[in-house]
Image (cartoon, rainbow, N blue to C red; front, side, top):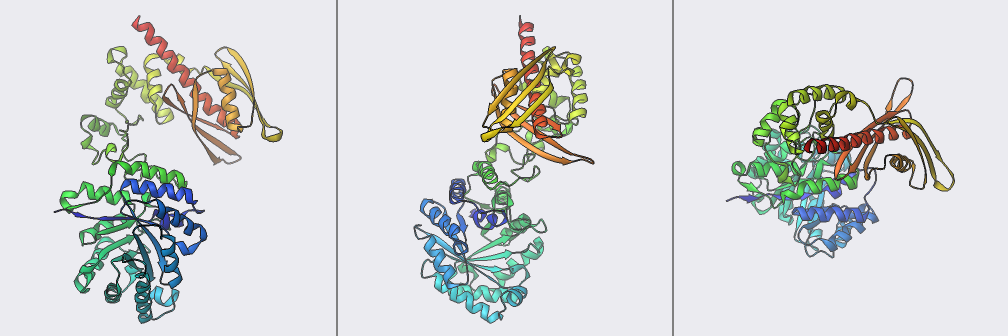
Length: 515
């Protein structure tokens, strides 16, 4: 029968430690509720003794959680334990998580104690925590560098004292899978009362081994995994929970294990945490990265179109993500181009695939990724005409005036005509330019996203502006490069306006074809 792996999330505690500033109570609560919705078993909400703000956040979360068990961290200090319990007093059930360094390095240089004193501190603290709850977790900090006999001895004693979960952290991410597995196996073989507790691991990613170590620990008998969403955390981060969760799901027949996680909530939770914490998820990040389900190689794209299982071991839908379209780049083949045209509703009889593919390759070599609306224009607009820009910037003047008002004046070539528009607004420089340009173009557009990137050149700084605009439920992307923000923003938006203009022209051409 399949056994459950308990998922312990420490995004709000260990994950937050990596942020430049603390999260507000409101933001922490939003994350906690999303983690609970995803099915996380235990949420480590914070370290209440560390600050009044952390205490307040843990207290607020303890009032709201209904299914997940709330947990707070405490040192082997009586006041820490008292404050942790006080912060969680509104929860029906809660866990106190006590930690203490056990490696010779931590014992001598950090704690300046003898090992026997460490044992006494641990046992005393667990007995103090038992006044508040029977759910007590003890972490042997720096277990990866603790001699195995000492580790076994302290684990045996804290179990006798009343700990119900024992955590074996690879605190500095120094172990490799076989080495870490041997530590876990030794605990099971040498600690006589190990069967009375749940064994847990908390791995760091300093050598890029956090997920591998966690999975190896599971195979050695561990039944609780600790980590964070997106692998957030100190230094190189923690075990990325989404990776472990999906590995358990994918290898359920091999491992004979399961979790209580609602897998289709993973992407939503990952994205929410990334946005709230203002942390960038690398595009090649396993499971939740933007490239995790994208395919650029023509060979891969052809295989995916025939059967997604050819190059995908999990589906985007399984983590709550919509199916990802194939990237159109110079490495794409005819199959991908044809697929995109079919997806847009175009019969192959309406265009010549060979001519379109050759035109596509030239554009892809020039600009990199090609979007569907650009492919559409290549298929139906004459090449020479397609190369011409309908909208071109003639002059731009942006000034910050008194009381927060920005004034923009823009002259734009519109085919053979020149049009001028002006705007005064309190909405800032970027919105001022956006409003002014659309007074000229007059499209029903909505500014969705904008990103500014500063590039250092040899003799000057260049601003690169990336813009996303929605037009009739379709997403358009533009980029502009210039020496100042105003011009680069204008060029990026004009880039999009030209693509919208071409998309409208395609519609007119197709209507005439149907006639």
